[in-house]
Image 1 (cartoon, rainbow, N blue to C red):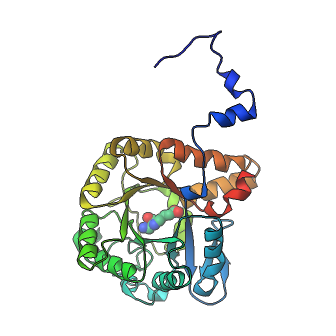
Image 2: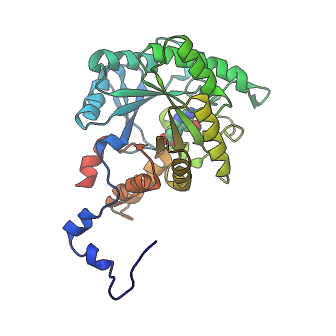
Image 3: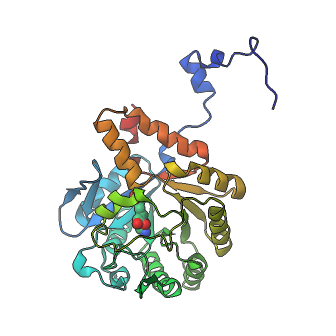
Length: 329
Ligand code: PBG
């Protein structure tokens, strides 16, 4: 690297005026950088506050247009759907995941009917919103079964694709699921449905408020350490991504976000493919609480989101996605 020396070189020269700072900006944010998560509930005409996530709501299907209209107006390219399934519909096998009348399927049909391709829709592929034990896969004698779970995930993927899902996002961390899902999609003529693999998803304490939002917190037995990654590891993230690319993933996700910026950066540098980051519920609620207590001001939100871009993410799943203009001002 070529650089000058003080006093002929003074880096503060270029920071002196606002126009000059703007001129040399390396990273900025636009609405195109965001994916908005939407939580779904049963019932009619309800917008329900989520107590663990101030400012975030659950919507009934008939109120969806309220939030989707806003996402489209703000030019956000994609929304992600997450259902809060009633406990009566949960069982050991997560059978509700294959029900055409489940919340996600209803929402997919509704949004596609109303908005066509004005906005992309992404859906998780995993069983945790539907199982009575809150795990992402099915259990036999205290073990999450890998291959048996994938068979259900394939059917969940085909169903969601059939209902209009544009981007399937397996978030379950079973081994080998990307290849099997891709193959099944192609066989059923869903060759244009994309796969966004949650390739590097860590067993994290930062998912707490989300599990509350989708109602899996109280039912979850134990932790997810036998399938989600150990946060002590980074080489392993590279191995996960390598496998998923070979199996046919179009994009990969790193999750959580802020504590894992190093992982985002190394994946981006090594593979040069679209890398998405998930600013998860715990990160969101932490920031919101600190702002509410006046420990930090709301400019911190923008600072953190830019950090995701600096690290190399193409887009960010964020609960702030639809309110960015208010934050930036
Ligand atoms: C489920 C899933 C989780 C999140 C997204 N999909 C939780 C988990 O794995 O327990 C977390 C998102 C968030 O915390 O905002 N497979």
